[in-house]
Amino acid sequence: MPILYISYPSFIRPEIVPSLPVRWYSVMYLVALFISFVLFNRVSRRENFIDREESENLAVATFMGLLVFAHIFSCLFYSDWRYYLTHPLQMFWPFDGGRFVGLPGMSFHGGLFGAVLGSFLYCRYKRIDFLWFADIACSVIPFGYTFGRLGNFINAELYGRVTTGPLGMVFPEARPFSTELEWVRDVCEKIGMEMVPGSYVNLPRHPSQLYEALFEGLVAGCILYFVLRPYFSRHHFGRGSTFASYFIIYGTVRFLIEYCRQPDSDIGYVIALGKNSDNIALFQSFLNISKGQVFCALMVLIGIVMLLLFNRRRERDAR
Image 1 (cartoon, rainbow, N blue to C red):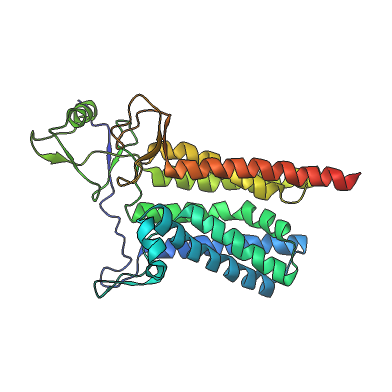
Image 2 (image 1 turned 60 degrees about the vertical axis):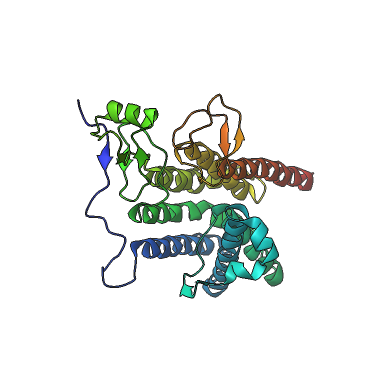
């Protein structure tokens, strides 16, 4: 029987130098920020938006908002929110049991909210056109996502659900499953994986980090930067249209890819309307919705409303 899965490349290590605490994950995120910033400056100069110094200050305000709210959302929506509401300072306490652990836990949707808030407040303070900034930023930021998700892949984290497809990959640190479970034995039989009855086996999963790097990064970025933004400019769409389109495109793509990602085991499905919803490790129904998908659906809805409002205002001003 042919083997229908891929092993995670053994030569990939999360540390750049084993003896030093510098990881590829951090480097890839710095690369993502650098590329986004360079592209933003390039478009800003071309459109005579703001100078480099103002661009740097705006980037700092945006990034600070992103970091703060990404962690706050992670604590409130993906952890014990009751505890953090009664102990709010613990969200930013970097020690656990006397050991320094930093501030683990980042939520993309929280980071998005914080980035929008931070940049909006700075633009308001400096009297900068926020929608102009948002249009430029949202046309280039997805290219940075590509490197961020590659960092997740190198870290062998945020992998997807179990799959019998040819792209399934065995991640070394993934949670193994007992061969006492019938569905585990069925998966092993389908993919030609050897197993010992009564033991545990590490099953192949979707490399969802790579899906996201491709579709949330390169594909979404090319659509926004090379297609929609020039089209909106050429046809005089209302300012903010690219910003709104980013919400719609990213939210849609991420919503679909979430079907390949396993929900957090302590959260599971937020909406479980499918006939089968007992095993979050497998895709069972399009009607089983995770918390991340709920946020993505809200992104799409907000994007549609913004697109309508921005262009209705344009039509009103043109009269």
